[in-house]
Amino acid sequence: MSKLVTIGVPIYKRLEYLPNVLKIVGSQDYPDIELIVSDNGMNGPAVYEIVNKYYSRPSRFRQNPSTVSMSIHFNQIIHEACGEYFVLLADDDEISSNYVSELVNLLECHPQASVAMAMQETVDEAGAFIRRSSERVPEILAGPDFIRAVWGTHEYGYESLSTCLVRTANLVACGGFPDFWKGSASDDALIVKLCLDNFITLSSRCIFRKRCYDTSYGYSQTTQDLARGIKDFLRFLDTNPILRQFACVHPSQWRETKHLLIDMIWKTYYYRWTKLYRERVTYKEWMRAGFYMPFIPDYYRAVTQTLTRSVVSDALERVEKHFPWAYKIYRTVNPRRS
Image (cartoon, rainbow, N blue to C red):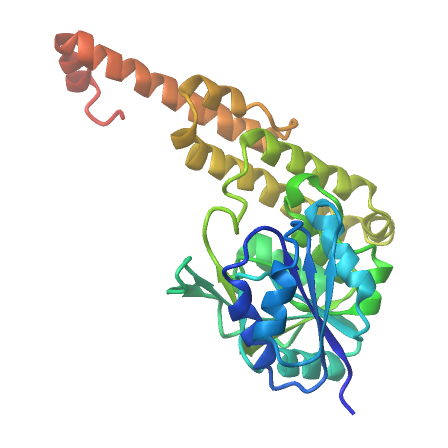
């Protein structure tokens, strides 16, 4: 007999994608699926009615009387799961019809692994294809090697770790999703906890589709909110018991892994600061936002260089506007300077 798999679909205020994700769960070729749809947006009977209309298999519905944080909501679903395996699937994302059966088979073949991941496709808000991860992946990897591949070499092209198939017992044992501010990097932190001293299996025979737009990738967050979530992530690296235990047993390996994770998280803020936030806030607010992050030498070197270039560029624009003759002389003397 096949083992029960729980698919949890968390809902907030967005309901337009829910019928499609219900259809996707219903089309899985795996026979034993427990669907839990959980309403965290106080939507009244609307979510329950959509589930009844569009999902024909047995399902469970839960609803929070008031909205809780995203991580707490995810953990509520985990603790109510009856399946031996668990998948958290956002209402706007998609999985192929063989997703559950393929990944369950992988974890059954590799009992030493705690997580199974599919090939990933990125689609836009309308569902049009953008890009996909590599089809050439090893079937099993040690956790530190996976972390290096995702955030160091980027060799497999994974962009999101938000959806995977996990042994439910491992999820509960590790404490589930850490409660970072606005959920920033909480899915990354969960995968680190699950696989750091463990293994992860990978498949190119099934697909997870991540819908890409501002809210889905956290691009709509303010600089203050993103910086606060990143501070929570950095604190997690120093205080989480699972990570501390691994650091004691494998100190050199942890130093390398921690460096990769810190590098990943400061670059997340830096690239959004240099591109997204530069266009969204005033110049003064943008400059101030560069210093919201805690002190990370590599980050502040990058910020200093960017601000220096920005100040020089701004000064040159003023010179060109008010003293065109001086600007012409400058360009003659420095033809390659930007």
